[in-house]
Image 1 (spheres, one colour):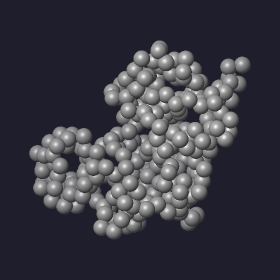
Image 2: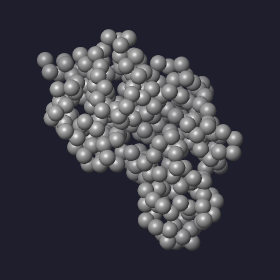
Image 3: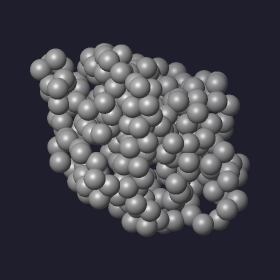
Image 4: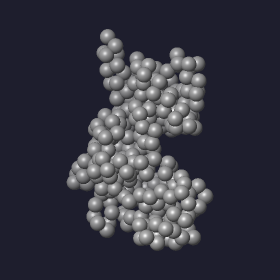
Length: 288
């Protein structure tokens, strides 16, 4: 039994997975995802169970094609959604799916081709200040801007950003789901005066123990988890102070867990390795 971790570098998360794999006596190798450009040359290095920890192949269609081929060859890719849905990492796409198909509370989300379209939307009353402008595909709160007036809008790369109304909140929530089990819930609270709650931007993360909150967030998260047929993910939800509702923010199919683990004391890497072993055994049984 063997596991291959696809990554670009030896990150903290990769090291934590290797620690957990060693403890479970699971043979594990790390392969730079960039090598998958020439899949046939590294095929012998890829185990039957593959854990994706990076999505850095530059072209989405190439990445999707590589993962699709691995699945077709009988390898268990975690998460398979990386091969099946090319737009899974688009926040605009996620919000649209959550609203139209999952039917959970969402945030009005807009994307524009140019500043003229933004001005027209403002004139029609479709959007109003304050707004949040952020990358459609982004991580760790990087590039998230609070827009209070037209002059604040970042026109460079506007096509790659989205706009949402600014939501008064006391932090957002990360729900970590593995194999359809909610491992735990944490709340991310931004530093004073900040419009982002990410730990990497100076925020802090605390464990959530309120069972009513956990139940409400779990209901939303499992609907998202099931719709996208995920195996593991981190789902972000925000509580809107104005209408007193939880609203879906985004889903991360390659989630980190350092802050979550520090707050909850849950050995996430250990649970991921246990899940990989389970999937490997299921694959072996199917091949008998």
